[in-house]
Length: 413
Ligand SMILES: Cc1ncc(COP(=O)(O)O)c(C=O)c1O
Picture 1 (cartoon, rainbow, N blue to C red):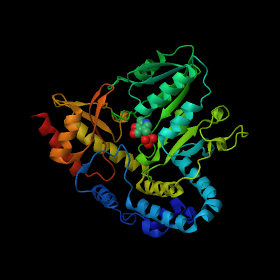
Picture 2 (cartoon, rainbow, N blue to C red):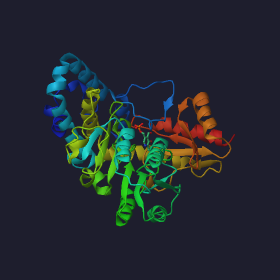
Picture 3 (cartoon, helix red, strand yellow):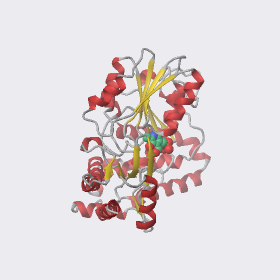
Picture 4 (tube, rainbow, N blue to C red):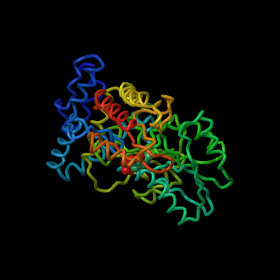
C-alpha cells in the first residue's frame, strides 16, 4: 500500500487533533517479502532486550506510530484544556465510535466505549433486570473476575448458577453446544461464554451457542476480551445479546479502552451502569455517560485502528496463527509435553497453552524466565496446568524457535 491509498483508506483528513504524517508506519511504501514485512513491523516497536515477551495476552504494547499519535493527543488536549473538553470531545467520540463499529462489525447505535471488558461485562451483569430464581450458566474456564461478578449478583438477587467444563479438545462444535444445552432449566435466563478462552486460547462456536440459547429464549453475554483486532468476525454475525472486549489487548490501543455491544432490543430494559439521563428510556445514549476520563486514550483508538487496517486484519490474524502453529506443531507430539489448546486451526489464533508432564506451570514459567529469559504466564486451575504463550505481531520466528528449543530441552530433563 502506498501513502496515498493509506490516507484514503483511513480518511486522514477527518482524524482531527494533532494528526501528523510522522506517525505513519515505516513499511507503508516498501512492498517486501513476508519475512521482511514482519521485520519492519517489529521495528515499529521499542522492545526490551531483557526477555522475549510471550505474554501479550494481558495487554498489547503499542507500536510507535500509535504511541506518537497518543503523545500528540496528550499535548493538544493539555494545551486546549476545557476548551477541547467542551467543544470537541463529544463530536470526536461520535466519530471514533463509527470507526470502531466498522472494526467490530456492528452498528454504532449498539456500541459504547468503556475502559475495559471488566466494565463492559459489569454493565451487562449488573444491569439485567433479574428476577429471583433466574438461572445462569457459565464455564469454570471463564475469566475469574466475571465469575465473581455473577456470584455477587446471584447473592444479591437470589439467582441460581450452574457451571460446566469446556472440553479442551472437542470432537465438534456440537459437543460444546450440547454441554450448554444440557444444563438449561425452565428459569435459565443467561449464558456467559468467552469467545476465546483466555487460559487456553480456545475459540468457541459462539454463533451456534447463541442460536441454541435463543431457541430456548435465553440471552447470551459474550466475553470477547481477546478478540477484537485478533481474528476476523463481526459481532452482528454472532447473534449475541451483549459483547464486551478490551481494545488494549489485540487492537493495541493505549491502556484503558474497551467496548460494549448491546443488542438494540435490550437497550430499553438493561439498567445503565452510569446514567446519562434517567428519563432517557431507550437508545444507546442511555449508556454513554463516562464522566471525565483520559480522552486522549480514546482518541488514540482511531490511530490504533489506522495501524491495524494498514497491517491488514487478515494478514495479522494469519501471522498470529502461524506463530502459534509453529510452536504447537513442533511440541504437540512430545510425550512429556501437553498442549492445552485444540489442534484444529479454526479453534485457535495467536494464544496457546503448554505444560510439561513433570513440572507445574508455575515452576515452568519461573524456569523459562529465570534460566532462559522467556516471559510467559503460568495458569494452574480450571483443568489447566501450563503456561499461556502469547506472541504478537512483533514476535520473530527466531524467538519462537528459541522457545521451542528451550521447551524441548526442559521436556527431556
Ligand atoms: C477472558 C477475559 N475476560 C475479561 C478480562 C478482563 O479484561 P480487562 O482487565 O481488560 O477488563 C480478561 C483479561 O485478561 C480476559 O482474559
